[in-house]
Length: 113
Length: 112
Image (cartoon, rainbow over all chains, first blue to last red; front, side, top):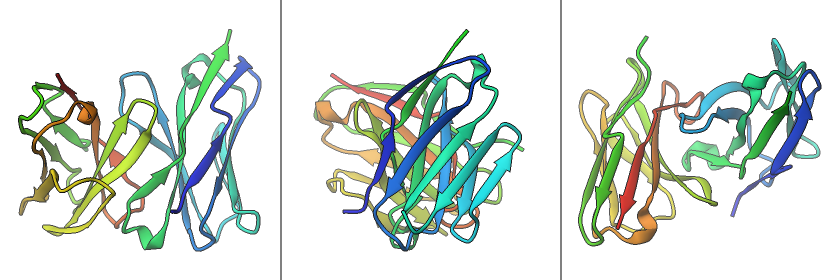
């Protein structure tokens, strides 16, 4: 079936450094790619998304890039802060979205002080 | 604007019992998605309701069912509970199908 692969599973960076999380997807027809942040015991929070007709989108310290040819997209967080520590999930829709969002396995981002 | 709400927060049931979980979407949203977040398995799509109709279901047995009410709130029912049904059940609502889904806080279901 369709799937989303996410790497790395754990990422530890020094406060102030940048963090990059990568995802690949299997269906070239996918056209929507959101990222969610889930803090411990909290709901997944939509932090940024991108559609297939756009190559890059930024929102303050976070950005998402999409390479449709290679079927991968990445989340970039600059100037990381302690509050960025969380599990981040990438997702994609397949088959027009009838199957909801298909999620990656998640990346546990740890910001070291 | 109020976010997606879910009740109850926690639910403890015995194997073989039934569980009912509830979700209220963001005002104006007509689509409700249900996901299961089990340890080690990530988030998996369960059910999709839109305009009062079940539009699709994920790869889960018929023991998982639900409905959407005229006010777009939704209910997830799990019959004949099994130990492996223990998980966080999340609902999400959206204004336009699968795009821009916003999640509720979840219901933690524990089956003993």
